[in-house]
Image (cartoon, rainbow, N blue to C red; front, side, top):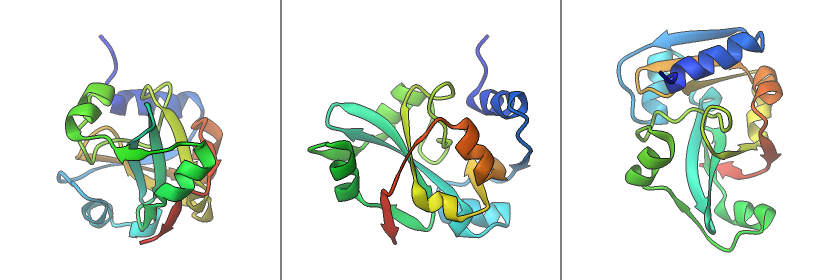
Length: 158
């Protein structure tokens, strides 16, 4: 039996010796709801977005109080067009529903991972961990070490 996304994240973090806090809360569908449920500021939330860049789906992660800068994404990745994956595509690619996608590509999710440099301005990050009712809070420095992300400047203030 394969691990759930939450179990896979736990296993990765434990194997890498990453300290983390796991919180169970009511189902949250937005970054604002998640921050409130966790008792954390919106700024430390890590918003994970599945976006199709030309013909390739990628996972983009940015602070929850910022928005994706699609022109920066196109410029830095050499893409002509970008669009958000819809709910059906998200389910097919990840097995997850909107709002539950964690900020991890391979080996957790089968996607190339691009993280926003603005994330590194925070000491910690919080994110829904493959579920609308489970969040993980961990140090950004640990995330940088274990995520295998490509780090680019891809966001702007909301």
